[in-house]
Length: 464
Image (cartoon, rainbow, N blue to C red; front, side, top):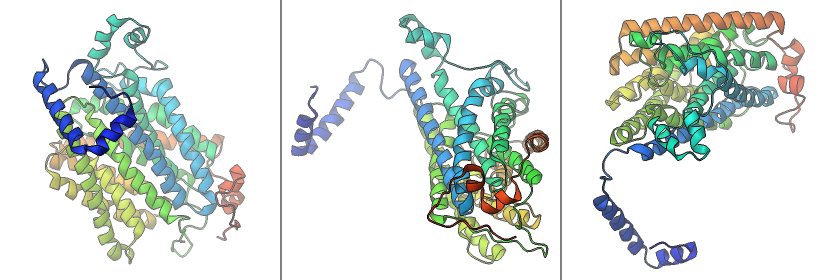
C-alpha cells in the first residue's frame, strides 16, 4: 500500500501508532526474507556506489562546518578591534582552498602519483569523469563503468578539498592581529595548491613515505602538523604583537573579545571532527565499514574528552589557575592526537592518547610563551606539537614503526617549514607582511576594512 496523502498517513499514525510501527518491522523482515539477494549481506554494485558517494558528501559537509568553528574560535580569541578581519580571512581562505585544489592541488596530490613518487600530475583542472559525463548525457551503457569506480569522482574531490581548507585555517589564527590580509591570502594560495598537496602525495597517494610504511590515518601530521609548521614559520617571520612581551620579560595579557563564541567554535570543531575522522574510512558499504566508523566516532569523542580533563588538571600547577582556554585547547589537542589512528579497536588507548595530547598542548603553550613566540590562538601547540605526539602514538596503539614515523615527521617538517619560511620571506620583501603600527594600534577592522565588528563600542588604541 502506498499512501500518497501525507495528511491521511499522519491521521492514521496518530490513531494507531503501534500499527504503523509493527507494520514497518514486518515489512522490512518480509523484504529481507523474500529478496533474491540477502539484505544482510554487504552492499554491492550501484547501492554501494550510492552509499559511498553519499557518505563522502555528508562527511565533507561536516568537515566544511569546521570552517565555521575556526572562524568562531579565532574571532572570539582576538581583541574586539580585529574580529571582522578574522571573519574575512576565514571565508577567504576557504574559497581560495577550494579553487586552488580544483585548479592544480588535487592533481598534484592524487593524479598519476607513482609508487614511491614525490608528486603527481602538474596538469590543470579536475572534474567529472568521461563515463560520468556520458551517463549524465543519457548513455545508460556507461552506468556499469561509473558504478565500478565505487563513488562519484567529485564527491571524493569535495571530501579531500575540505581537508586542505582545514590546513589553511590553522595558519589564520596563529598570525592574527598583525599580518596583512592580502599577504596572508597569497601564502594560502601556495599552501593549498602546492605545499599541502605534495605532502599528501607522499603519504595518502602512495608516495615515498607511504612506501616506507608511514601511518597517518586521517592527518595528525599530513593536515595538522603541516598547518602547524606553516603557522610557526609565519609567526617567526612576522614577529609578536606590539607590546606583547615587555622589556622586563613579563607577558602583556590580551583578553579575548568573546569567550562564549570561542567555546562555541570548539564545539563546532568537535562536531566536525566526526566527519573528519569517520569519513576517512572512505567507504560505507557493509558491516565492516559500519563497525569501523562507529569505533572511529567513539575514539574521537573519548580522546577529546580526555584532553579537556587532562589539560584542566594540569593548568593549575602550570598556569596557577584552572584555565578555561587550557580546557578548550585540550579538547582540540585530544582530537588532533587521535587523528593519526582513530580506527584503533582498544578504546582505552584513545583516552590515554587524548589525555597526553591535552598535556602536551598545555606545556607547549607555556614553552612558546617563554620563548616569546606569539601564537594568538595556540595553533602551534594544538596542531603541530600535538600532531607530532599523535603521529608517534601510532607506534603504541596501531602498529606503526617508530623509525618510519620519525622519518615522516622530520621530512614533512623540514619541507613545510623550509618552503613556508622562504615564501613568507619573499612576501615580506615584496608586499610586506606586517600592518603598520597605526593599523595595529587602531585595529585591522578599521585600518584595513573600515568596518567594526562591534560598532556599539568605541574603539580605543591600546598603549604599548
